[in-house]
Image (cartoon, rainbow, N blue to C red; front, side):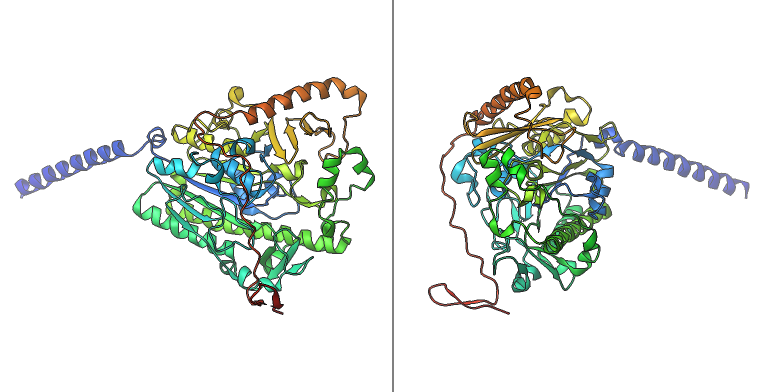
Length: 519
């Protein structure tokens, strides 16, 4: 009996020893935080359409955006980010190539990227070159919104391995949309509190498709660059009614800059905020209804973002994925008496930019250093230790993230038509005309963040204005420099003819004239 017991004890000791050795080996093979950082990271790039900085985490106390706010709390927030052109097509071309609009030669919508810069390597294309799956869902390059929803618009086939074009109830029920001009939506203020669920809307479908892609990548282990482009809150402001119910319309404020201040602006600036006659001097109640719709649609986009980020967490991919969230340009909601975009004021140039990076602890949380949307491309490449193509002129924000801003510029530059605007931490200077012959604007954001007091005629600011004029001229020269290895640049490329918006259910004769308007 004692002999049997000895044998059992001996085998037990052997088993325990083997178990300990196995456990130690297993622990040794487990990736430490240091090892994990060497693994290839994935990228989830999410861009909203026409989203300004009216977001809870950016200081707006009215707009309800819990998911963006949550991303802000765990991410790095660039509070002073500006687009390079306040119009969808040119801005998106700049983001995806890392170049200014003077270098892409795209300053209009509906231009195929390869017609202007045929040899450029886009951000998604660079991922493909490195063995990643590059997938687009929704609007990344330009699409006429809403007329091109469901199609590939003026997309770039070099950029993607796979593309998905969601098409939802908002398109099928387009005839229900309220609008200032009959059957005009994308360029005109228009809105609808829709029936049905989130998942029936185009952006809800886009979020569902992103969720499916994340599930697939979690199962197959493939590294990915997943680009999700929401079509909202771009007009028409369409969202399920529950998002409208989040807001009390009577509490929404409409800014009033007054007409007399227009006389203090250069003529091109004054024209930019008075361009759309049908949207001028709206009755206050109508203006509140429209602004409420924009906020409701922003909350709807926030909810779709939340669905995607929750799936990222559930799959565990959040531990190995960089999340980037931004917009293509800013947006006026009555500021300066203007609605929508296409100005060189802060409202049209400033955008949210949030990076969420796994395992990075020693980074800044917020910065007011001016950065540009063209910085996204080289920043992602730097974080992933992928060599950035030589034509990319944007700067990596990684040093700034690590609190070493020595290589980051101190201003951002935006162009629109015959004007350029430069934003520093404190000032904005805008130059109109090639030699400034059409006038200048100067705003001090420490005292005037609404940009209503043009200081160019303030004699105490002469030296400041002169120094800023030199700086903006240098920035303009840099933006016009031909980048290394850019290849061909083709000037004056024509836009495609804008496709007419055909609302489902309307009828037209053989000449294309509408004969029946769906009620």
